[in-house]
Image (cartoon, rainbow, N blue to C red; front, side, top):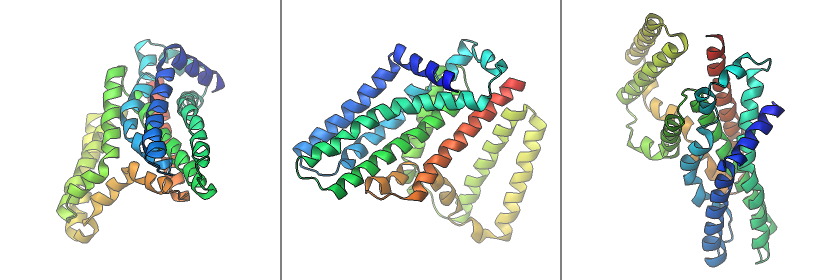
Length: 289
């Protein structure tokens, strides 16, 4: 894992992607810091961070698009599949290399609350700012894990970047989307049916067996319809509840408010673990196929 970690870090800095990412994030945060905190007199550094979080769904695909897709394009992924190294170690090495790139600007941000303390900022408020920085890092790490997984699904960096962008954009604006979804049982049935179709497509991707995927999808849909007519109240507001799990940006509100919520920390860590697990499984499938 350590060798993979060092290799990926070298690649990021030799190709300038790492420098560009760090410079861009630091520039944006510094700009908001000057506007909101120094010029406007806002004592909360989290205001500057919240103003920058929206660009994550733009810059994260650039950072993650090559992480696995490039290995496929250059056919070096075959070396990884046959190497006497656990796939989990390879994936974690790549993931932690990206997190390190994210941590570099985050470490620089630790200085900003200290600068504000020169203007009379209280210690309690500084603690809230450091909690906001923690949320900023956790939020970014989960987006990196999502991008890492999507990068394993294609050998095209462009496709990986576009798919990651679309998915991250969806998770960032999901609160606005949920407002438009009716809470009726019928709407939930339609939404869950869409999930069944998606599950069938994923099963086909994993097994390459059309009949098995079709049969599993049909059985799930039949169960879904039967439950709908037997216990319709279970479906009321169900799809919005399920989709709200993907509301990553909404989980940042407590961090930016200075509240250290263990549930939110576990949410982001669990999200990272799930997508790292999915990445490992996707690679294992190719390794033994």
